[in-house]
Image (cartoon, rainbow, N blue to C red; front, side, top):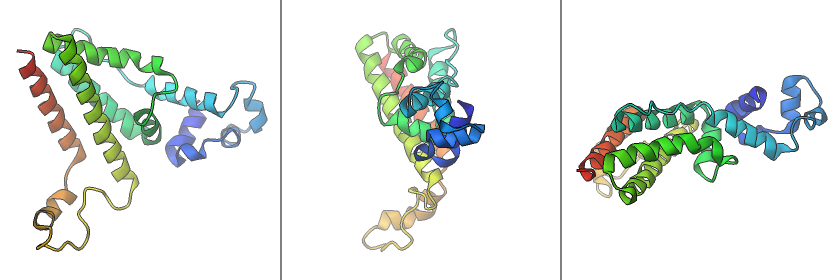
Length: 195
């Protein structure tokens, strides 16, 4: 699995072929079929391997600390394996069971914080949507030569006064800082709702 993951991390999902994995291991591609049925099973194993890197928070920690831990782990995984993260973020994981401990920890923290199951589920989807969306944008920016954070090189200040005035600030925005601040806003909202 290490060879397959290395290929995906370096060259993207499209580079993952039985032939590429075989070559990386010094074997013929056909010999891999003794271990996996097809490319989809190989992909499932790669995703499971990556998701297995997620560390669930200590269940005895305060709920807000558990949410911070979850958000930071999700970001760590996204930045370490952006191509696999893209797959996780845009559809159901090939093996959803591997994510269950992480999702359960998130729901547990939110249930404790709100004391209300309906509210916990609502915040769960908000938390998941925000973190996943922010990380997709960050991964895309890191993979691109021109960051989506930047305004176009030439901006008509009369037509777009705010983009023109804030162009430098947009270009120098820090993803990590913005992510952490947004998580704190979400935690503050959950805390207020739980009262």
